[in-house]
Length: 344
Image (cartoon, rainbow, N blue to C red; front, side, top):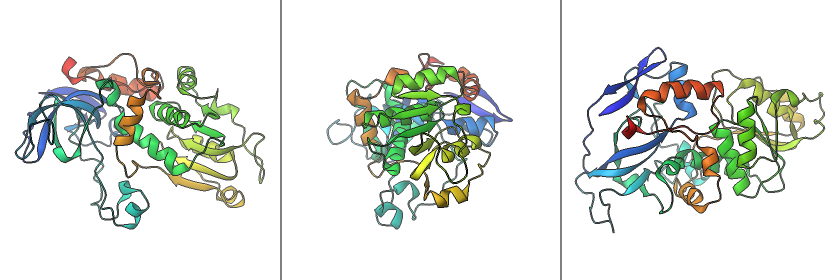
């Protein structure tokens, strides 16, 4: 089967790889769509990924084969052709992190190997049948591939404890910032300002629920020990840029909250004195709530999200993955880019 394989040195190419065989309790999924994630950009463009790796983890697909022990009846089991996504790996349910509703950082889980991938930029993928979730009727396959990043956005908003009374800043209007903005708006938070340097992305932010947009240079630095003229109560840093994190901290009001969402390779300088004087809360949002992906599927199927604005109009085949990554990194594309392996 064809796969978009990372070769090393920031390069990718389509190569033929063996079709995996599902073992007991597993299912073979034919990948319909797979979104390009910011993690994929870091791994490829910053050359962190291991050579000969197949990336891609935001996917939807149909069941193509079932391993032993997976019932093929469509009632208590699964039927071939069922439209599915794979749920998050659950935590132990008993440790301190799990009891606080944060199974993504379960204390009894083996440390994550962030470079180990058996990804979905390819035609077929094997998944544990216990993790399968059925895609609701009426939700398209390309929009169902937003399930994983939508679950992250839900977790991010939940961790921040945002209410409709909050004045919210989102820095970065790439796919992560747009989804965060859309989920905030769907949950009744409407006073949202998005800071973004790219004009196309600022326009898209308004389309998905932002009340206002600005460029980063419009966010003026705070004076020592004083709030800015129009401070925010919560800020979501979604760009991964150190300068954006530093700006977001400056924009917060007393008792404000800064949530780190986007990852980056340059570390910001945190003004700890300001954090102390203003009693700011700074938190990182890693993955998902304890409910896993089911709430994300429900939200995607509800009609409450502007799905077409969150996804780029044109899908790409496997040969177009690397070019799409470069365009996303440059800010030429705003929404999620979907990869369609079958088109290759």
